[in-house]
Length: 122
Image 1 (cartoon, rainbow, N blue to C red):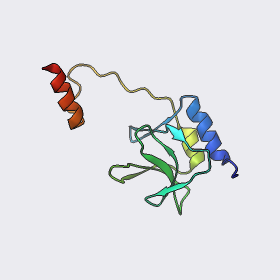
Image 2 (cartoon, helix red, strand yellow):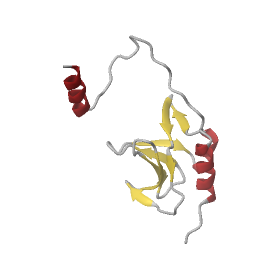
Image 3 (tube, one colour):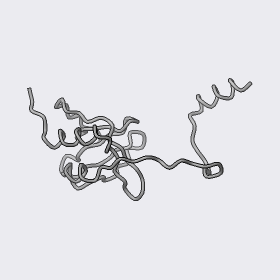
Image 4 (tube, rainbow, N blue to C red):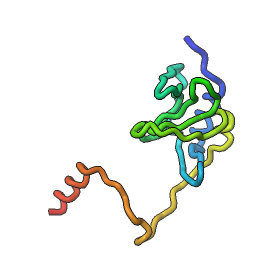
């Protein structure tokens, strides 16, 4: 049985308080699930220790303490923090702005969902 990484324990505790968002260039990245069970999946040369609520990966590159976000659809990588302690320090509670009519220029919707929505309108 492996012991729990104390840094990951601190991260999980902070996330449970509701502080789960880090802003990078005004873009929010959220930590949803922290893996404390010792599993260390490696994806795109990143040792994954957490995910956001969309299944994107959060972890460390094999050769670096930097914490990175890996978009599971594009494999694009964004550096979130210098290390796990830096990530924990910078996590905040975050609420998206309420949008008013006319503020949204464009949005993506899953084509299958769009078909169902339009079918229900008929």
